[in-house]
Length: 503
Image (cartoon, rainbow, N blue to C red; front, side):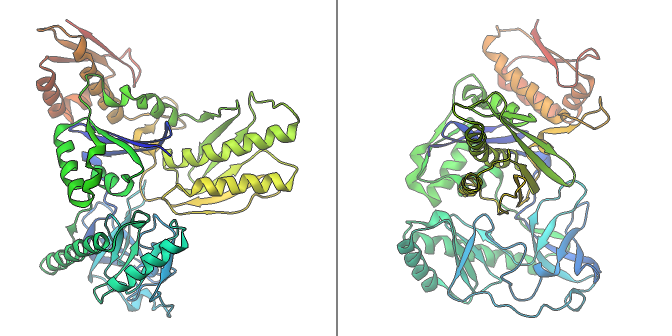
């Protein structure tokens, strides 16, 4: 599989496209005003204990108190913890294994006003506050260090028995009283020296966190996880990656230093994009992002899938569409379902759809065909880092599955409720449109004569956003392109329409 990573950096946001064999597999966005908190460590203060729910609400300095379930606070780590550290991989425990024990009721472990060290496992989503755990995990390049445990695990994605045995020996030889760890998929083929160096760095990091926490008042931020660009490089950049292309010199140099410290042999794969055309437009990513927000997704065969999101679940329907097949109806249906299984997994990753998912495959008469489609779905999901659980295809052709949700979906990130249809539909948010306009202005630079001014006509809401919240962004862009930018509000333009001209 040929993997490419394209990174677009602006003062307002970072956008990352992960392309696999020419198809957009994942699209990640981090806005400076909306940066996620998953992975951050806080010294929190218990606000309320709820014995009936066996949970507590903990103040960590956010608008909403964070949610802590008893299974994520027990004084000893449990194998059945719902927020297992290193959850991007399925884990097989080796050596000292987590032990089962009787869980004390939360009211016997926590009290109002108590100060505890916690880590955010899931970002706040919608009206829900953050989900937190006291089982701290510090991800590195090759392993996840867990100072509150005493066992080691190995990613299930490492399938070679000989390699698993080698890594098990390394893990057990490095295990100390300071904590346990999970060897990630990236550790496959890595020497003991490099793994030990990774562990040493994380152990030192944990020591610094403890020292800071001792002198801090609650609630307060103790440790902030890496930003999106650094996390992506840490988690996705491997020897199999063909290239990483970045369009901002400062970030390019920062990532070169980062990679030089942790994986120096991969530095030659990082390149700086210097062409005038915006990077995402040049590589055809912008068009693919637009398609990722559409309800209907066409398959190469002529069939299609539709994706409908509700408050409770996501429903995915498979249809034959224009595909009529060459032999018989069963063959046509089977081939459509087989292709749909691959595309569905790609869309789940790309759109970051989490929670309960119901897939309605086209009914197949042959049990053998149903099994093949199910296996194809399971094989495709192996590429997904999020934890998933898939039930077998029912007689009605339905597949029930769950997918781990740790951050907002792509739809919620880029779109907002439509004011024209009372929230029944979705349109691009004013932030998304505003940043689109800034990128379009930058693109216009290549066709401008000296002394020309840029005039942008757009919806009043977008104009207000650029003048008020993004005034500094406009100033920065004017200096960068060396042209005056004039913003004009127009009630005649739709929310996501804009016109750019010069005078």
